[in-house]
Every structure is written in structure tokens, then in C-alpha cells.
Length: 127
Image 1 (tube, one colour):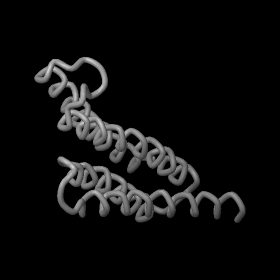
Image 2 (cartoon, helix red, strand yellow):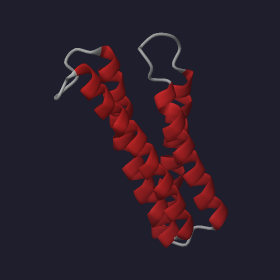
Image 3 (cartoon, helix red, strand yellow):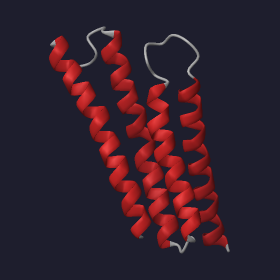
Image 4 (spheres, helix red, strand yellow):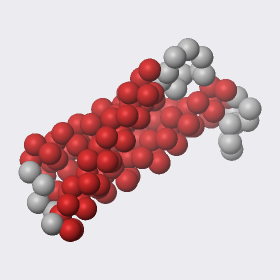
């Protein structure tokens, strides 16, 4: 379970950075609720929102895989993929222009992690 603690701590810090960014923008732009039609705030909210949509599921799957006896390299590979995906993804959500390569790479890493740990859990259950 110890490696999961590492990835949970890292994901917690990423969540903090993304949420502080939203709060700072809200203060700067004096927008207390929603995005107020402000594109910069809208993108900051989506960066945090996407993180909040995927990171908890990934962390739950990682913890269950660890509790189910997954070998260390698997936990580390899945944890690194999740953390890297959640760091890279928001870099591709800037202002809605250009090719969002980091966004796609980050999402792909996250999906691969979710798929691999889900299949592992099903293997454990049916195995």
C-alpha cells in the first residue's frame, strides 16, 4: 500500500495547485460563482474539473489493485501514468487555440491507467 500513498500525496498537491489557480483568478477578476463569461477562468475551472473527474477514480483503482496484491512495478507504472497524465493534461487546456497535444497525451495516459488497473481487478476477481 505504501506506493499508493506516494501517488495519493502527489495527486493531492496537483489538486491544490489547480484549485488555488481557480481561486486566485476568481479574486483577480471578482467572479465569485461560475466563470462569469471569462474565458481564462473557464479554462482554469475545466483544468481542475477534469482532474477532479479522473484522479479519484484512478486513485481508487490503484488502491484496490495494491490491496489485491498487484506487484510493485505494476503499481508504480500505473501510479506514474496517472500522475503524469494528470500533470500533462492541463497543459493542453490553455485558451482553446492550437493543437492540444498535451491534453491528448495526458488523457491517453489516464485512460491507459484506468484500463490496465480495471482489467487487473477483473482478473483478480475472476481468476
